[in-house]
Image 1 (cartoon, rainbow, N blue to C red):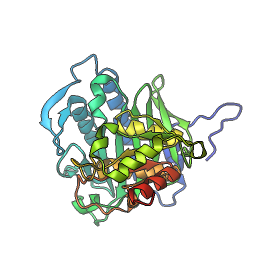
Image 2 (image 1 turned 180 degrees about the vertical axis):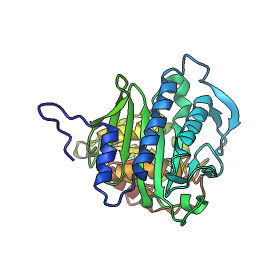
Image 3 (image 1 turned 90 degrees about the horizontal axis):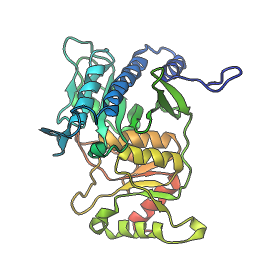
Image 4 (image 1 turned 180 degrees about the horizontal axis):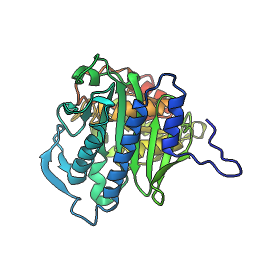
Length: 340
């Protein structure tokens, strides 16, 4: 795709990128493009609230808890409702699922039901909201497997390799919309002066091996010996293998994985004695990020198997995550298998 303008720099908006991608698929109906457009609108609405969160009564907690037992932040609730309301009426979706809701989210009866499924984490890293640390939204899109009408749990519980698109929004010093449809990973940064997402990171590729690891070492004593040995190995000095690695940990999954994709290395969220399968959700976090990282040339594993090959068994299933540069993930798997 040529994004050069005669006599000037690259200029490609998200809207134009989506439309040009649609033209490459014969028989496209425009439904998928409409879906992404509505998501970008929701993103702008969430960003508007994030940027003024310290000025209005939107920080802090509600009196509700989500399915995982976490108290829902006010901004989480706003993001959750904004995405649902932006997506429920377009006729592109048959069902949705949100990390903040126990059950699947049906499309209202008075709106048409489409051919796609949207799964989303409305505000990842929300524990950092009050500290003004980068947070984000993660989303995943599947084609429905049922024939027509209202979507079902069967439409939602599909393995990650069946995703037709995935992406995330970053709310930090600037706002980014990063997405992938299986043909490269592209990042767009919002220009507030014109209200448009402009292509800023074209065809992102992650290095084969990095020199940064990201993990919450506060849980070290709860990890199994193989995991502990791997982290110790990363911190040992060895010029031949580029060690020691530098440790970087933000505590917002989407921000940590974004940095890992740009600079290389590995992000880890292992299981431990309290949470044997880790804390991250397969459907809302691991699958979409694994789809993106793999399309950028990286890898994602639960320590034993490819994330995208895991057949989900429940809507809020938790799975350990090792994601990043391909060679780094392979090394982690070797340690976890006791091979090193």
